Length: 405
Image 1 (tube, rainbow, N blue to C red):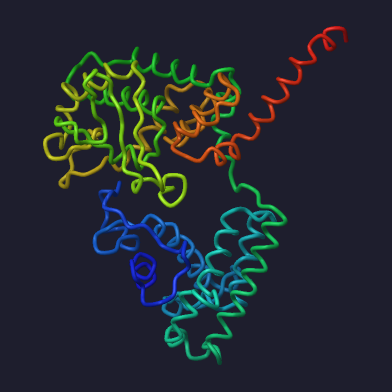
Image 2 (cartoon, rainbow, N blue to C red):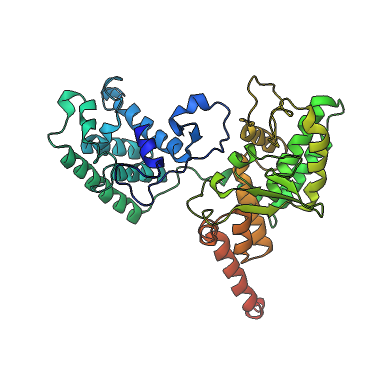
């Protein structure tokens, strides 16, 4: 928690790398915040802390793993300190263990872990380097003679390893698009979503009440993701207020739009740092929005207590965001989306831009706008489409020659 405080303070007492600031936001998508104490500071949510916590627990968990199982062989009590991140030898053993478990392939998770180690031990602005008192949290037999030297050795090793990994190249531990590969190969992947929505509409309950309200919510959720492919976090905390002050709002001409403060985005320090999100909703979704807000949302638990657009059908003692929204998307896509075993909300962030670029090759600005991301980032993620576009263009230019072959 001292590390989180250091990373989120406006004026930290220790040196901090210019880009080492972690954003703390009031906008949080989880209702069970007590269970995630490690990513909160003064009641505000720190997304990066949640990611870093994964690195910390993985390494310290390995340290407490029995030696006969390839672990560090330390007791549970001994490993309760991040001072272990300055132990070059054990860091090396852990990274080697991770690599061996990945069939000797270096994936991005390993690279980000090594980068985290280097940052903690940086000679000038490393958090551990500037906290020599942490050596006392280690077992007496494990304390280095000189803390600064230990940090420097850990930094040098991590920085060298990081450079080698980047030169060698990393592999994806999983391919996020694999579950929707057949859909992305379609001439217009969005047609599969249109087919899904048609299937959902045909399954409308005739019992009314909360069953029908849940159905209307689900249809709107899928249609809205097809129009505005936001991350699950942003969908969970999407708000509507009758006075038009929420995220989802209606303009004077009757059109619906979504506006979100840039601080609520994952890339708040990157692509989203200079602009808020303010995008129109596809006209085909307007009727669903109005029907849901005026009729069906009122049937769901907590509708009078919170202003979130999407609500769970399960009553809760503490009204809050719909924590299992992404699970519901997975269920709906598994049930209704052709050729898919189920995807989360993020899958729509592949389907929609792919559809845009297939229908309008070279429309990188449009794809970046719908994702609220940098054009260069989108080009990097969809380089395969870029190459395909070039190949198709070349073939069209040389069509007369190919026709004679």
